[in-house]
Every structure is written in structure tokens, then in C-alpha cells.
Image 1 (cartoon, rainbow, N blue to C red):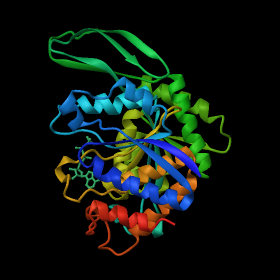
Image 2: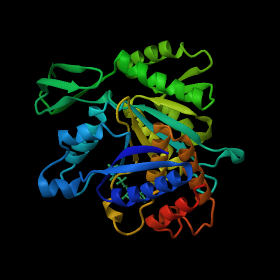
Image 3: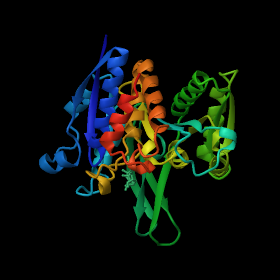
Image 4: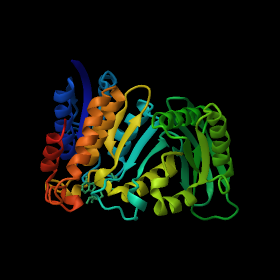
Length: 375
Ligand code: ATP
């Protein structure tokens, strides 16, 4: 019997509710597929911060780094100024462990209505491979009251540190903002290889890159050229480069036509939310932050403070995230069992579904429903 150590950070709002159901389902999969999980639970989030002033200590990062993976509920609460916990916990974890891939699968289910009619029983089965550390998310920029910029900047990443000076003068005095996006050859290479390897694993012959080189030529022109260079290593898989606006248009019309979608950070954030909506809503959007050290799996949705304690939280996104986590650590039979259990649960009686999907199942009842279907 294999044993895994998983860092568990339930976090805020509905995070503890949905992650408890994900834990329940993983345990059920472990019983059937002969693996055991030791959950190393962390209290970080709004309540801990309000009580102690501590956000995420370095000692915890060291400890977490020894685990096989991490499962996270959600972070953020109205009692804490926006950004403190998101930057202090989520972004710190992503950058500290250099989780350079944000993987967001989008799968439609026959029983969950899709806002776009799918042709002849076709299904949406795509996955966004979003670069997670560069682009316009470098945090480099400034706002000025008089159009003059003169400020140092620095950013630290797993691959490199970058430091410089932002200097610019507009010819007139007015409030203005500047923000810089950055892409690097190694940053593009590693995410492109990940996307192509994934397409190969999924038996697909194409990767579609979301770009916009016609309007943002330095950044995305470079992205196109570097991606093409890496794509040449893969004889059997072609690269299709599509402007992100055209991609959104096509996704809304023919979502089933897409498989692996490779995106720079900003476009990936937007395209994956669109896909979430197309496949049934936030409560189904699962995600993984993946790197060569500790990888972290979390639902796409936030802490949804408006529905805490009401039973309305749909735990399926957290459960599917947990399945991605099992696949990542090598428990693919357990992961497949969870995916099949979710499909089977969703194809049951219309009333026996999460409240978000029109049924009467509370968060706990939905977790029980999936756990019962594990074979
Ligand atoms: P963040 O910026 O952290 O993603 P947000 O405020 O943009 O957070 P969410 O917290 O994801 O958004 O929630 C948006 C709304 O969607 C919530 O108010 C809630 O009603 C609904 N929602 C989110 N997640 C779920 C879920 N798992 N089940 C049911 N409803 C949900």
C-alpha cells in the first residue's frame, strides 16, 4: 500500500466545506485503490491572520515542500483587505514552488446543461495550459499622478530574478499607469513542452496557442516565434496560433472543437473562465498549479463568502481538483475512479445534484453522493 503526505490548506469561506468533501472522496478512492493519504493540515487564511497577524511563515513553506502535493480550498475574506491573503498565500505559494503551469480542464457532462448547443452529442473536453509566472502578471508597473515615471522594480521567479528601473515621461501632465509584461525563452519553452506532451498523452494531434501578435507584437510576436520553435520538436502534433479574440468567438460557438489550449498568463485566466461557464459553472471548474517541486490543486472559484454555511457550495470543483492531484502524484487509477464517480453522480436523478446545478444536494450530500459512486 502506497502512502502519500498531502498538505491541506482549507482556507476561507466555502474552502473548508468543499475541501472536506474532496478529502472524503480521496479517502474513498484510497480504500478502493490501495493507497493512504496523511493530511498535513494548515490553518492559514483570514481567521488565522485576524487572530495572529501571521499570513504564511517561511517555516510552513519548508514543511509543505516535503509533502507530495497540496490541496487548497479557497483564500480571501471580506474581513481582510483584498490582496493581502491572495498575494500573501496564493501567489507566494505559486512563486515559491515555481508552479509554472496552471492547468484548467473543462469537461462537459450530458446531464449539466451547456449554454451553447453542442452538435450531435459532442462533448467539451478541453484543457487550458496557462503559463503561471510571466506575462502581465509580473507585477512590474506604476501609477503616476503627473505622467512621470521614475521607479525601480524587481521580481523574483524560479527561473530568474529581474530588476530594473521604470522611467518614462508623458509630454502632458495627467494621471497615467504603466504596466510591463515579460516573456522569456525558458518560460515559454517549459510551458510549451508541457502542452505538447499533454496533447500527446491525450492522443491529440494539435495544440492551439492563444496569442495576439498583431496588436501586441513585442510580447506576443516573441511568444509565437518561440512557441513555433519548440513545436518543431513534435513531428506528430501541429501548432495552431489563433488570436485570442477569435478564439473566444469560436469557443462560444463551437467549444467542442478544442483540445489542448496553450495560453500566456492573462489570456489563460480569461479563456478558462469562459470555458468554465460553457461547461456548467464555477462549481465545476477545477485547477492545478504545477511545477517541478510542490504542486498545488485548487478549485477555480473563490471563497464565495455569500454562501458560507448555507450548504449551497458545490464541492465538485474541489473534488475534480483532488482527482487531478492524484493523477499528478501517480495514482491514476484513483483519479480515474473519481472522474468516473463524478460523471456517474451527475447522470443520476435530477434532484440529486448540488444546489448550484438545480438539485437539492447540500455540499455534504454531494460529497457523499460522489464517494458512494467510487468503484
Ligand atoms: P475570487 O476573486 O477569489 O475568485 P470572486 O468573488 O470573484 O472570488 P467567487 O468567490 O468564486 O468569486 O464566487 C462568485 C460567486 O459564485 C459566489 O458569490 C457564489 O455565489 C458563486 N460560487 C462560487 N463558487 C461556488 C461553488 N463552489 N458552489 C456554488 N456557488 C459558487
